[in-house]
Image (cartoon, rainbow, N blue to C red):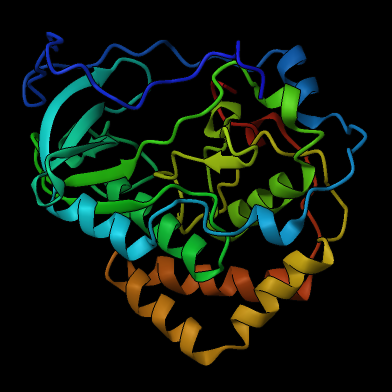
Length: 305
């Protein structure tokens, strides 16, 4: 990566004066929903030539220096320090510091999304988005598709919610600038979104890390019982899945131990019907391993970015 690219800092200034938000009394003011314009639709749906693929196996590997067990342990035991509101989005979201006293006070940055800060939605049960965030991470790990930063459920300054490890990314790299080079990773994410029925895959939910691989974030609108797939990844409509992606799904679906473990974990996070439909979508995807067709503007999430 070029040295002059802007890097998001994961450290948090302890002297910063952050505004403390009262989630019980303060309301968010969100912009009115508008129709996507034709330019946005074109960007989302046009087919583009693909660059030579990266190593598919390498692009799905665990990418953090610490093991998952080590990362989750730190995130669970570390204490919340300073935090500040991330002012965009429909729900209250905070960038927060976790201080690990067991490791000399080492600080780690997380994105904290409290249940109290979830905006009511007509098509998702209230107070469940944080569980869906965790469930999406659980699915990604079960499939060995490690593009979602670690997510846990824990108590925080505004009550129970998710804490997701903050990842440094190249903020100057936008979706349309890397979609060609990282086509294989985006295909994997697109299949993941089909399986989880993701209703909110915006361009800003695919981030290019400094390891030159894609990270996926914001999975709170997954696992609905009604078909809700809304995504900006429509480049591959009608194409068959790459062989390695199909093999990952097939190997998982034919491993009773892995299937059973995921079923148990999802049962603790989602409604029984939501869990049943996830596994039904997995079965249907294996029967017809083809990317879905784009038929309506409603298949692209509001806001696009």
